[in-house]
Structures are given as structure tokens and as C-alpha cells.
Image (cartoon, rainbow, N blue to C red; front, top):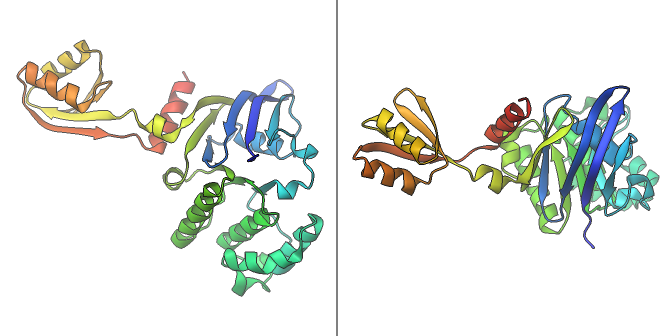
Length: 295
């Protein structure tokens, strides 16, 4: 059975402060799920509970139906990148991976191919303390892949990566999910994340603000319209039940298809010079969810 992540009614309090409150979502096999939130939103607490680093006050965080501490040889079930992949600065990249393999009961023969896979074969003997941030991130990903897990949990894995590194990471994640694996990823690089995520979970002030497929969240496009009489157009669109905002000589209309907007303009005999459907980007979705959540 493919592994999946299930977060159910998760709550963590510190005294009177709730870091997360009744958080519920899933990350499914074959899909990349993006966990998004501002600093202090509760996403790091959620990931730490999932990986057994913090105990919840109530609720559960499960990987393939089990808590992390209940997994037999957990590195074979889940690989994680947290806190920029901590490693001893005096160890070489090769020694770091060998140590992690031995601790996890994994054959050290995996180390060489992994270093090549993440592009660190030429830096294998170099001290990790001399690695760039991007190199440390690649080493962290290699560490996560040691046990050939079905589930990957990645917190800001793209930090420090150059454009070829970004492309490499996207290809890695898509290859993992194409093979039936599950990916839960957190990142502040929303434009980059938009290119790879299938599902989006937005958390704010410790609670879920939105959770849905990206295509569903982005599918509600608004229309940018420029016409001969914007006042009459706005009145007609509002009468049809649309949400209308005016900016300079343009109208931004939500709740109508381009065909409906064009037909209404034709009906009231107002010429339209511009009609463009603007799909929401992930940054728009994220900001709108946080604004709505703050109300």
C-alpha cells in the first residue's frame, strides 16, 4: 500500500499559546503537497510533530497509518530535510552519509551513487563545513533518500540552490511522485513551488486557512476588462452578481466567465477594448488566504 501522510485534529499548545489548532489535512501518494505559512504560522511545529521531534497536545500525525515512533526502521519509510540538513562541519560529505547509513541500518553501498545523483561526487571528500548552502541542501536531500523511502518531508529544500539546482530538485520531486511516492514540502519560494505542487495547504495562526488542489484554487480567474463606459459596465456586471473592482480605466471582475462578460457588454451596447482572464498565481492564493484568515 502506498504511503501517505495524515494529519488529524492536530493541536499543540505551549502554556496558553496554541502553536497549532485542530489542523487536519492529507498528503497523498503520487502528489506533491505544498505546506505554506508565514513565519510563526505553525507549519514547522506541524512538521516536527509528524517526524516525532515534538509531542502533540492532542490529535495525530501519521505516516502510512502509524506515528513516526511506531515505524519499523523509519528511514526506510520517510526521508526528511529540516533545518538546512544539519551535518558535522568536520566530516566530509561521504563520511556524513556513511554515518547516517550505519545509524539507519542501510548498506553503505548506497552512498556513492547518491553523491553522484545529487551532484556532489566531486565534493565527496570535502569537509561539509566548507560546503556552500546549496551544497549542504543537496547533501540533505541525499541523506533523506538514503533509505529509499516512499515519503519525503522537505522544509525549505530549495534554499541556496542556483537555477540548475532548482530544476534538478523539481525533476527529483516529480520523479518521486511519478513512482507513487508522497512529497510534503514547505517553502517560501512560491513562484518556484508553483511549478511542482499538486495540492496546497495554507496554515496561518496555527489553523488551516485553505486546503485543496492547486488547480482548484487557481481556477477561479478574475477578468480584466477595459471598455467604453466602465461605470455602466460595472453596474451591469454587479447586477449579474459579479464582484467588481475599478482601477484607473479598467475593471477587475470576479464571478463571470469571459463569454458572460462579453455578452453583458453587448447587451448594454458598451464596446469592450480589452477582456483578459487572469488566473491566480500561488502567491495570490497565499496572500488572499492570509488576508481572509486575519478578518
